[in-house]
Length: 197
Ligand SMILES: [Zn+2]
Image 1 (tube, rainbow, N blue to C red):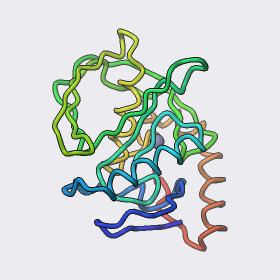
Image 2: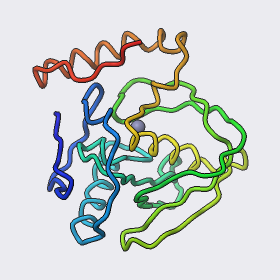
Image 3: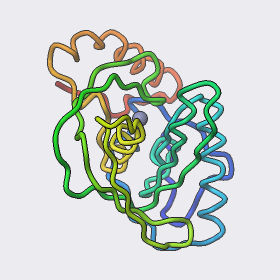
């Protein structure tokens, strides 16, 4: 599905888009209107994320090229209290150190690979009312959320976790990428935007 919602429009029934949908490659536009439509859309994003059993979901993953993602990092473990959070117009400053974590992505079903990320950083974002917030995150100190937000923030810049893989790592997932490309062609009649390297 290559849904390219116009900036002010949020779909009533957002559906997950998978690789190689072109919207996953498009840098998303800032949110400037903090209204009821935005809040309702974020609630629908949580529903998609829960259906797909994810810990994070970025708006481009449901075809909306806007700088929004939602997370619930506690969903990774059974028995942990849910921690749903909305991040609008997020940005990372003062990154320090590196860490490696095995990641997956709802838009790349069946692909998992170790990705290098920042270990510590500050993230700034806005909430549904447009108010500014910031928080320091430290992956090395056990904050898995620090991995999730870096992965989701990438989506807002048209970057996917597979872009971070080495040539050797890419070779290991190539077959699965080809399968996803074939499925996309069958479903849409289009080639989409396959990774070319
Ligand atoms: Zn992802």
